[in-house]
Structures are given as structure tokens and as C-alpha cells.
Image 1: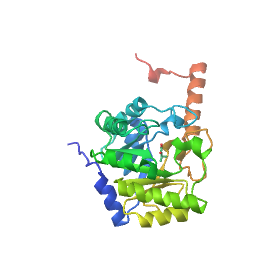
Image 2: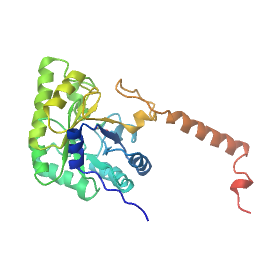
Image 3: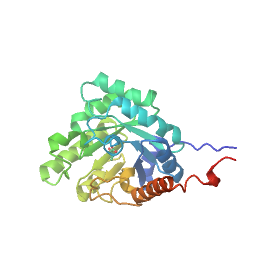
Image 4: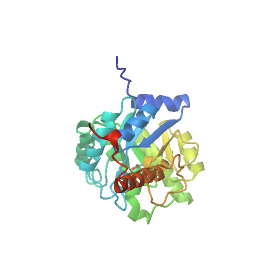
Length: 270
Ligand code: KIV
């Protein structure tokens, strides 16, 4: 008999903080990767708008659309049994007004099957977070370095090194918790600031370039597997070199087709 595992909920994620158990999060944008990480026991799969950079080859995440997020979230939901699936709200899907934000958050739940959504912003997005959680859609917030704000930030830079900026990020963290977010991503901020925020909040913090004291960690799957040829930030740890392995496999296939070594009798019908 096929055993169907129980999918984690936002309550399980909250309990992990209380129990002092670290929360593991990875991004996925397709069925095979999502299935592999689900079977390995990942707690949360994030269908990040980083899909724009690592999958679609855009320069940044800004061009990603709702249709692309729905398209990539569906196979991730189908592939997972036990992980909580969180889908990113792309740029301009929640910034215009509250009805638009609620409608687009709802599409990620209803049409794509995600169990929660993520959006970028702190104090400036508190009203939006409250509006979405008020219709029972769990929200993961994302503060610190927010890639959709690349033009304001002038690039992907560590945030919160100056006192005023650190105070703003702490205020953002408190605002998203008060607005009802169930967790908050802290991206590219100094480790002591992330530790202070993690201790101050009752909701879990998920760090990416935010040091070891967050309640969980998230990285982009293509980064940890060495699949991208792009620049990799300091906070990325590479756990495999899949690009080399795939490149070698493809080259060997081409060589065998050219030489006639493939297909052999073994791969032919009698
Ligand atoms: O888009 C994304 O993948 C993200 C994570 C890296 C936090 O926002």
C-alpha cells in the first residue's frame, strides 16, 4: 500500500521554532527537483521568483509574471507530499492595491495549489500582509535585501550595516509579525542583526546570508548544486557540482552519436 505522508502546515513550522528545531528550506521550480527534496525531507519548498534568474535566464526577478509563477508552482505541488509549498508573489502582483494583492495571492493557492505565499517588504507592506492573511492565506514575509527592490538598493548589497538601516529592518520585522506573517525571510543582513530579530520575534526567521542564528535557512537549489554559471554570492555553499556532471554526460552523448557508438545493439530492437 502506498503511504501518503502528511504535509507540513504553518503550525508545524511555528512549532519547530518553539522546539528549537531548525527549518530547512530550498527553492524548486519543477517536478523532479521538488520530488527529490521532498523525499529527502525538506521542510518547506519555496517556488521563488528566483525562477526568473536561474531558470528563465532573466537579468533579475522583475520580469517574472503571475502566469510563470503558477506554471512553476503546479508541478512542485504535485511532486511534494510532506513539504509545505510556498509560492512567491512576483513584482507588481501585490504592489498596486489590496484587491489586486488578494486576487493574485488567491490564484497561487487556488490555481497553483500552494499552501502559502511569500512577498517582499516590511512596514511598507504591512497592510498588504494583513489583507492577505485576513482571507486565510498564510504569508511568509521577506525583508533585508529584497531583490524586487534592486533599483532602489542600487544592486544586490548587504542591508542593515548602518544603524538607521538596521533599525528600519528591525521595524520591518516587527511590522510583518504584527501584520500576521507566519514566517519571515531575512536576506543578506549582518548576522548579529539577524540574531537580534530572531530572538525578538515569535514567528520563525528563515535566513539567506543572515548568519547561523536564524530559525531556518533557505538557498536556491541551482546555487547549492553548482548548476549556474553565474556569480555566486558569499552566503552560498555549494554541496555538489552537477553542472560538470551534466556537461560531461552531454559531451559523451554527442561524441557517441558522432562516432556511431550509440545506439549499440543493446539499445536497438531485434
Ligand atoms: O526568489 C527566491 O528564491 C527567494 C529566496 C532566495 C529567499 O526569494
